[in-house]
Amino acid sequence: MGLIVFLLYLAACLVAGATGVLFPPGTWYDSLDKPNWTPPNWMFPVVWAVLYLLMSWAAVIVTNSLSGDDASRIGLSFWSLQITLNALWTPVFFGLRRIGSGLLVMVPLWLAVAGTMVTFFMVNLLAGLLFVPYLVWVTVAASLNYAIWRRNPAPEPIDLDA
Image 1 (cartoon, rainbow, N blue to C red):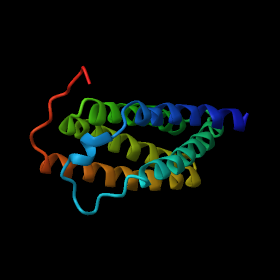
Image 2: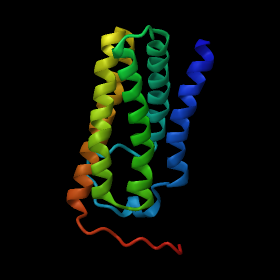
Image 3: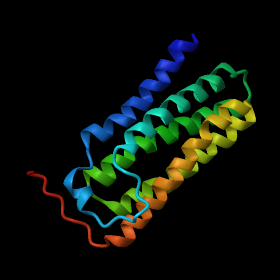
Image 4: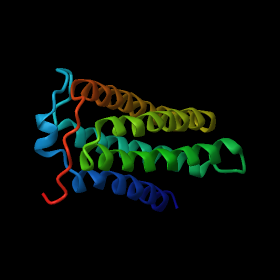
């Protein structure tokens, strides 16, 4: 059961990650004024691949700990919310080219990741620890989203025919 459950959680992560293929950064993102601490483009898929594995592993630990306690159910609800918001951010930021709206998705995403981490800690120490790198990365991503929004105040109109 553990492997099947892991693969199901990983599939949810890969669906969220597939939004990066459907809505790639492209030349629009390259043309934005970004802070000098912006991670290189190659780093994003590498970090996300590792994070998706850790997120799936943590969710399996909590799923295997289900025993009618509220913390497990709440933690898995937070997990579902964060992966949904994770999948939503890329189409908003890259697909619609709405930097500020991306930030509006990022705030509840950060809260959902933090909520997942805290409730996972309540269920199992390792499950909570596996979420720490994700919260760190989402903090960096939110800071980057904010910095890009501040540096690029006028959104470029979307050309739906392109």
